[in-house]
Every structure is written in C-alpha cells, then in structure tokens.
Amino acid sequence: MKISTMNIEKIRVDFPILSRKVNGHPLVYFDNAATSQTPSTVINAIVDYYQKYNANIHRGVHTLSQEATEAYEEARETIRAHFNAKKKEEIIFTSGTTHGINLVANGFASEIKKGEEILVSALEHHSNIVPWQMLCQKTGAKLRVIPMTEEGELDMNTFYDLLSEKTKLVFLNHVSNALGTINPIEEIIQKAHQKNAAVLIDGAQAAPHIQADVQQLDVDFYVVSAHKMCGPTGVGILYGKEEWLNKLPPYQGGGEMIDQVSFEKTTYAGLPHKFEAGTPNICGGIAFGKAIDYLHEIGFDTIAEYEHELLTYATEKLLEIEGMKIFGTSVKKTAVISFNIEGMHPYDIGTIVDKLGIAVRTGHHCAQPIMDYYKIPGTVRASFSFYNTKSEIDSFVKAVKRAKIMLS
Ligand SMILES: *Cc1c(COP(=O)(O)O)cnc(C)c1O
Image (cartoon, rainbow, N blue to C red):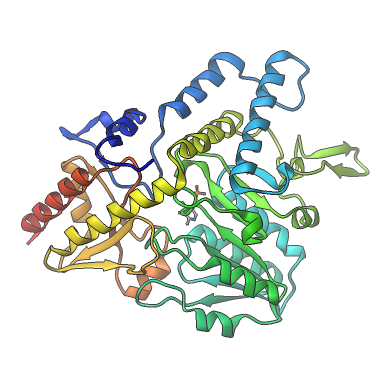
C-alpha cells in the first residue's frame, strides 16, 4: 500500500482527535515528535481493559487476573516480534525511554570504574545526558562527547578518535528529536564492539518511523516510549541482551521482582521480572501492543515513504519564506523541521500559529547542547506523522507567513 490522497482520509478517521477544532480552526497536529496521536484501536483497548478485565497480573488465580496476565504477556510477545528480540525475557516493560535509560545507567555503576569512559553524542535529549552525568559522579568515570556538525550530523572522525580501550559504553539516539537526523548506528555499534564497549540506543524518536531489528543491529540495549508510536503515555520498553540483563543488578526493589524474601537474604526473580518491581502499567502495556499492531497494518515502509514526501514538500514550501533558516539538513532525516525566521522569536511564531489551530513545538526540545552549538535559544519544530497531509502543510506555511507579517 501507498498512502495517497485516496486513502489518507480513511487513515485520519482512525484518529478521533484529528476531527476536533482548535481556536475555531481544524486542528493541524505537527507536534508528533513530542507525542503522537492515538488511533481508535488503542483507545478501545484501554476502555476494554477497564470495562472487562481490570485486575492485577502474575499473582492471581482468578479469571480476571489470568485474562489480564495473558493480554499483558501477549503484548510483550508482540513487542518482542516487532523488534526481533531473541527472547521475550529480553523485553522489560518500563514507564518510558527515560526510565529505560536510568535503569541501564544505574546498573552500570557496578560495571564501570574510575578512569574508564562513556561516549555520548552531542545530539542527545536531556534524558540521555543527565543519567550518565550522575553515573560518572558516582563512579569517577569520564563522559566524553561526540561532537556534531553544522548539518546536524555526528562528527564520525572525532568519534573514531574518542573510541578507545577505555570506552565502556557508547550511547546515542537513533534519531535526534530536535533535528530529525538519522544517526549511523550500525557503524557505531560495530566499531564500539571492536573495542568491547556496550552500546545503548535511545530509539524514542526512531521507533514511529523505522522498525529496528535488535539482532541484526547487534545492539546491547534499545529503549523506546509507547507514546511516540501511537500508544499511551507512561509505558515503554527496554530491550537488553540477555547476558547484559543477567549481569546488571535490579533497579528497584519491590513486589514482582523477587524469588524468595527473608530478612537474611532475598533472591531475585528471573528475567524479565527482575527489572519489573511493583504493579506495572498493565493497561498501558496491552495498549502498546495494539499500537504496534496498528502501525504494522499501515506498514513501516509505507509510513517512511509517505512521511519523507511530507518532509520534502514542507521543506520546499518553508524555504520560500524570506529569512527562513532550517536547522538540521542531513540527507538522512525523519520528518522533522526545526527552523527560525530571522528577527523573530520561535515562541511568538508558535503562539500565532496556535491561534490558527496549528500545534508545533517551540523551545530547546530538551536538547540544549544542540541549541548552544547553533547559538540560538530555540527553534520552531514541526514534526509530521503518516496521518498528516500536504494540505495541512499548506495551512501551516500560510500561517507562518501571516505570523511573519504580524511580527515584522
Ligand atoms: C521523547 C524522547 C525521550 C524521552 O522520552 P520519555 O517518554 O519522556 O521518557 C528521550 N529521547 C528522545 C530522542 C526522545 O524523543
């Protein structure tokens, strides 16, 4: 299938929110990099859970508990298959990307020593910087940064220079949330492994557009959030290679994660439960599985192709505006456009287009180091999804032009 003017309307019907109005105008939702919208199948799965089989999982003998456990574990299997993990036990449910990263960073405290190094890219989201700074403070390890280029790509030559026998872990995002750059993670994983360094990939921004195959990538850890891929907020997964997950200590103590408990000694449960202390977001996990099913119905190749069409169209149209500067011009990009117009504050542009029903993000996009590189306080970021249309882009460009007249 190919998304076209023929069937885009049918896809849009799957997303009830897209028919609402904002400030008297039809909603144009271009903030997909912050969170995606939710199709009816996912909304219905949430309603269904609370109406029919809401119960705690893994411990009850009663029917509802068994039904809930079954649905939750079925979702884990859907997610395993999607990422092509070898085993279901390698899929740990988390509250999202941030949780997944913190879980690994915490575990690495016993894996890394003073004088050893962690490499991080300059294109990171704050949630992928701060946990490593905390780990370095705790262990005396050193954080080193792979710099970026004017195009918003990683400076790979410096990466090769920085990578050494001291490197224990490399972490970076698959796709930059602020600029949309798709990073060459295959090459980075391969080179890091040659030095015996582990690699953690933040897949939050890639997951809605690119189906990552964790075995083919040979990645050690891969983390995502459901809410960026048509699922609900507050749930995500950490994929970890079994060897690593066995080696790392649990992140939180509590129910579900234990085998035997006494005051003298507690033994931990096996994978994945060792990392899943407490009652999880059961409904969220189930709905996450449905979101992945939905994306597969549309098809990841179809999504990537159509979104690229939107990106090309919007880039051309926006560049017709005088004073337009787009940040992040890598040829390998997802459908994200970060821009400024000379002499105008991004916040003012965002506020005016919102009056016309258009949702974009303004600010530093949780990636201040990138803004520092360009010496700007922030940008306007429009990020597209497969349910957006060229006619919405036309409305947006018109609104930006109007903002420009009002602000000059
Ligand atoms: C959104 C995002 C995160 C944070 O995800 P949460 O769901 O807030 O935990 C981390 N990294 C990237 C690249 C993101 O886009």
